[in-house]
Length: 414
Image (cartoon, rainbow, N blue to C red):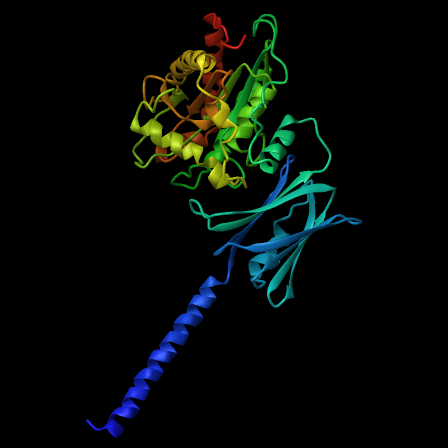
């Protein structure tokens, strides 16, 4: 082949290769630019959360303005899209902190969000890496600027601001007297998940966070009718609360018992039945217990906290002699509750199981986690949304608690 014959062919091949390379670079460039794929607003009386979900990590700058109160967030490297334009439509009139949200293309490389506020707030803005079904998230948490009576608020702020709760987080003051006789029994109910964390989702779309909140509120109503008991909830609305804050709130309230309520799923849709769990000193008592503990402990990652060492507080709740005694009391409580639940629903296991549930790690409060049913089982999902089943489940748990004390239970920390 002569040189003159080869050159045109060679030039054409080189040209095609160059075009292909440029196209590849172009596609990479487009893919690297963050795309907003979802926006969500979670109002609550404790704090309001605004979440922007994107294909890549978002770079941002914030500015707080007064008269009127506004929070300005400049998001770099993105373009305004329909999701950002419609963000204002997710703000409801009953949101205690946000009046409205405005979004606009501030310059070719920056989208500006302006949150018009109803009151003075302490904003905390941070990013989260992908986890579960979520991609990269930019999270805006708006806390009221003034202190409130609910101890949860101070704990939540401290948790997010200081990289976890302080190591010396402890009860405000030790309770005196025998619970149930000299003073009321203080019970903290913990409806699992909430806010950004829906928990397990059933075949028909039922969310765990919704059904366990209904069961917890029903149990709260029943406990309030007892003359010798006081009851609190770690959350009474659709809001995300970190696991460590749930434990710390129970301790600040000087709780005598801590009951976490769930309706989890398993990898097999045939798994069914109710279960009760206590904390383990060594390891999980079964594969299912280990799996469920892991899914519950991932709640902080899914719900979203801005710290890497999310369990710094829990790391200080060492398994000492006090904790061992507390676990023994937890097993006794779990046994009486499991016995009552077994009269209402099939039991997944006929004994109290144990695993390393982070939410059960209060060293001085008998704590159990109740899996009311498997939301991943179609028939049990239907039962979980039935108000009659919810009422009976609450009654079974309360009856188990009363029998625990009737048997002469002496709390380890008294």
